[in-house]
Image 1: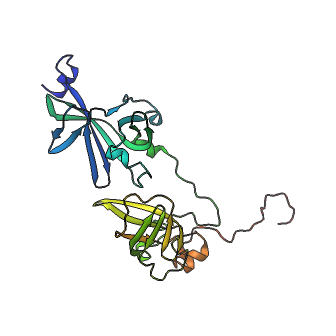
Image 2: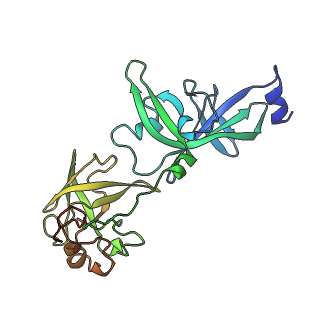
Image 3: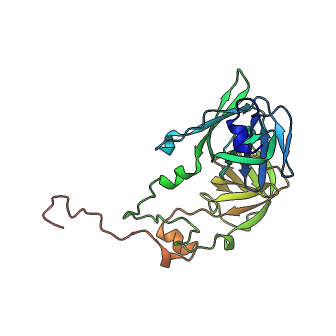
Amino acid sequence: MSFDSLERSQYQGRKVYTYTWARGGNVYRYTNADQDLVLQFQTYKASGTMRHGPIEQGGDPIRSPIDVTMESDNPVAQLFRSTPPIDTVLLTIREVQMDDPTDRRAVWQGRVTSVAWDMETREAVLTHEPTYTSLQRMGLRRAYQRLCPLLTGGRRCGINLEAFAIEVIAQEVQGLQLTVSSVAGRADGWFMGGFIVYEITPGVIDRRPIREHVGTRFTLTNFPLGLVAGMTLKAYPGDDHTLVTCATKFNNDANYGGFPYFPDKNPFGGSPVY
């Protein structure tokens, strides 16, 4: 029987769901069936306690989130245990009829936005929003300001950050404190406001902002999950978005996006002298 016939049947339909989370090159596959499923050469691990809320379609996608409940020690939930991943974690939910598993229907797709932990039941509730909600958000409006509003290394900025990055080795990781092998003679504070980039597993990149930089020691803003001594990482310099830094540190003052020379006095302030 076809998927549609099984879906309409009151007696023959045996529907289960598959859940696929993707983060970079890592993919996590689960099903709420009572046994593992192999579909198109991919194995979906059985998780009898995994479940999701009702799938609804409405005019306002912001009001159509979906919660997926799972064990708190599930690898997907553990991604959010200390610090949320820097990149987006996408979820695709599909319906599968056990009598015709080759015909699967995607019923929902979105991204993880938050996680709540239930210590009593030892479960984690992952809240997801539909993917297209991000398309409806207002972008930032550019305004007159002294500091440069452009993203450092972005298209309009024009700085090639790779040319300023250095490759170092993590020598010691203690909480938010990271000691590296060398900073190539960079002065204290050179990397403050910058970030480190490291590979947790093949294909999965994470980054952490640098709050302070003294010698070969960095103080990070978030715990570097998965970073251990001996790993190779890249350190990128910080930018305070002033004209002086843009000119002396990056030699990029020609693309400076701020307005450092506009007058302090407001011409509409009521004073007869301007």
